[in-house]
Image 1: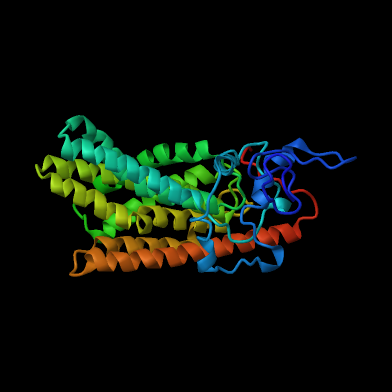
Image 2: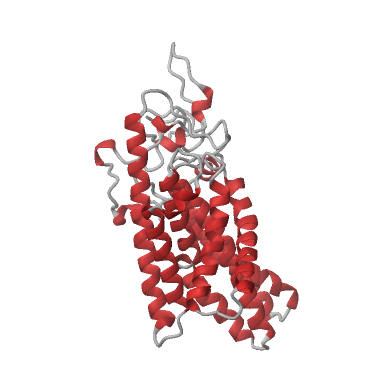
Amino acid sequence: MNCPQCVYSNPDGVKFCLNCGEKFVKANTQEDDNSLFYEFAHYVDFVPKFERSIEPKFQNIFSRVFRNHTELEAERLFIVGTALTTPKITEVKETWPKPWLFARVFIFALLAFTGLYVGVDYFRNVNFIPGLIIVGAFAVPLTTLIFFWEMNAPQNIAFYRIIYVVFIGGIVSMLVALVFFDILRNNINPITIGIGEELAKAITVITFVRYRKYRFILNGLLIGAAVGAGFAAFETAGYALRALLSGDAKNLYITILWRGILAPGGHVAWAALTGAAFCRVQGDHPFELKMLVKFKFLRVFLLVILMHALWDTPISGMFPFGQIFLMAVSWVAVFLLIRAGLKEIGTKKSMSKTDYPIMENS
C-alpha cells in the first residue's frame, strides 16, 4: 500500500509506513498501539512468505546491505528488546534475517579511523593516538557484533544490554583468564591458552544467560558474541599499545590491521558458539551443572578450544593462511547454529497455542 504522506510503497498488511512512520488506521477497527513498536520485525526482510525458508541462501543473506535505508529503519532496529517492543513468539519470523546495519557501522568506524590516522601520521599529533587505538580495536569486533544482533530473530535483547555485556563481560572474562594463567603460569602453551581463555569466556557468558530469560539459541549466540567482542577489542588495544611502545609506528598499524581482519573468526565467533551451545542445552529449564557435560554443549566447546589452540600454534603457514581457514570453519559452525536457532523458533511457534512472550525482563 502507498503511504498517504510520503507515497512510499509498503508491503501489504503493515500498520504504519516503513519510511516516514505514518500510522495506517482502517475504518471501524481498533489498533493495538504496542503492536506498532514491533511491526518492523514482521517485515524486516520484505520476502514473500512462500519464498521464505530457514535454509541458508547466502546470496540473499546480505542482499539488503547495498540497498538504501532510511534513518527510521535504523531507529526501529534500536528500539527492540524492551518490555514494550519485544514481539511475542507467534510474531517472530523463523526465516533468515537480512542484516544491513553492520555494514554501515563498519563504514562509520573506518571513516573515524581514517581521520585519526591522518591526525597521527600527517599532523604528527600524539593526542590522536588513544582514539586511533580504541577505534582500531573496536571497529571490527563491534561490526561483527552488530551482525549477530541483527540476526537475533526473537529481538528480545535491548541494545543497551548488549553494550553492557561488551564492556563488563569483556573485562570480567579477561580477568578470569588471567586467574587461570596465573594458576598455569608454569605450563603456558597454545593448549592451555585455548582452555584458559575459552573457559573464562564460557563462565562469563553462562553467568549472563543462566538467570535471565535468554532461552533461545540465537540469544546465546548474541550474548556470547558480545562477551567475545569485548575480549577481542580490549586484547587488541593492549597489543596495539605494546606495538607502539616498541618504538615502531608501523607495527602499531600492522597489529590493528591483521587483528581486525581476523577478528570475526576469533574471540567473537568462538564465544558466540559457546553461548549458543549452552542456550541450546539449557532451553527453558533452570541452570544445572550437569548441562555443562551434555554432548551438545561439549562438542561445540571442545571444538572452540581446539580452534583456539591451533590458532595460537606457532607452525609454518598458520599466520595468516591457517587462521583464515579456522575463521571459515568458525563461521560454518555459526551459520549451522543460526539455522538451528531459527528451527527452534519455528518449533516453538508451532507448539504455542497461546501467546508466548519472550520479553527480556524476568
